[in-house]
Image 1 (tube, rainbow over the protein chains, first blue to last red):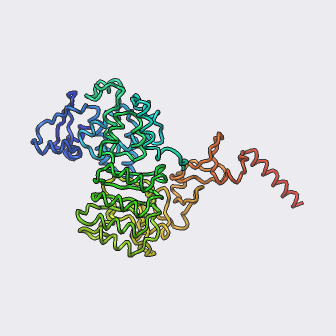
Image 2 (cartoon, rainbow over the protein chains, first blue to last red; image 1 turned 180 degrees about the vertical axis):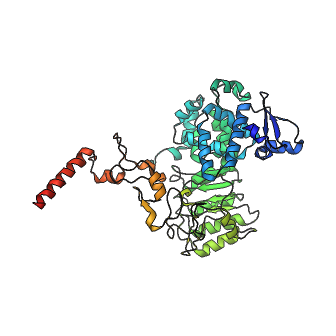
Image 3 (cartoon, chains in turn purple, brown; image 1 turned 60 degrees about the vertical axis):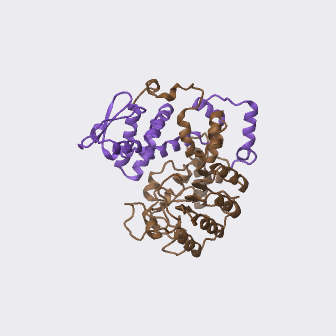
Length: 159
Length: 329
């Protein structure tokens, strides 16, 4: 998929932390703000190394950007849904870091939405288990925070 | 694309060096995209997330209150949670918050002059005058307000709309800006607050009945008529695809909404008694029974708890047949 984009002569080479080189078209590269600013600084012939991004994450990002640019609105929605569905939670977290680093705005919007969907209507206990986080509150701290936000969770019936 | 989770973890960066008990760095990135409810929920998970939520300004710049919180939000609580943004609130989205009053909104607006998106759809206690006052405050001085949503606020008249567009108009004419952002009927429910391009004002004057209403466009390629813009009263639309409906191709759903024939044929399952599907908005309305057959709520209620099975239908048919044969005799 990356090869397809390299047809144009002025493609941009990206070197990931695990040494794999990706060639992407300028339109794709420009959608990653971090790279966009790097292109401006360098001349385009140079290989841009990305010490914080691995090959898997970059390939996923490129896959997303290519899939997104090609099709109509409803097809994009479908593609986005499938794209997020294919990711495991662990991949999602890692990819989110990479996306945050590369500043891919569209994904930076889509992915938190997906995570937000995951935690929708879930209990605190579920979230701890789901994300593998240990409860490090002391009982008094926990009671305090419960009290602070009681307005949101207590009293009123679910509608 | 295919990769085992193990390989993925060995690839992963400095993040994984942290002990597995503390939250993943990615979670902190997510915070600023969460709604208030999710923020409060996640602040209860552990100390570092609590601190990130309560001490950081970033998660609170885009404030989104949706169900189930919207009915519980009072003016005081709104003031409290907006104060976390330190006066630099960017988005204020109160979806259907029925307890917020004009005064409550105005107090928040007075402290946050940088709001660029003000979404208060169906906040029914806010009046058009209250909206006008708030928008006026925001449009003085630096004027960062770019988009408002006020659908569902009662009694908005043309004069109000004129005043609002007068405040909000920058360089382009309002109509020009509106045309670039079509609103589709079937997408009216999924409000995406973080979307960059939004209409300046969601309401406009319906070109057909000249009332202030939400005016919907026909989705591209679905309709060849040019003048096909209008409010939902003037132009009935398909609940699933948003295209306009002529009277002959309107098909009813079990929820009372209308579908075009194409969508109606495509929509499954259909009620095993009345043969109507639910539209996409109401798929959760199916009567839950262990029975594999689908029965819509209306048919379930009409059955008075007796489920229609082939046998009972067969029995009913037999009774009717008997009745007829007797009357004929």
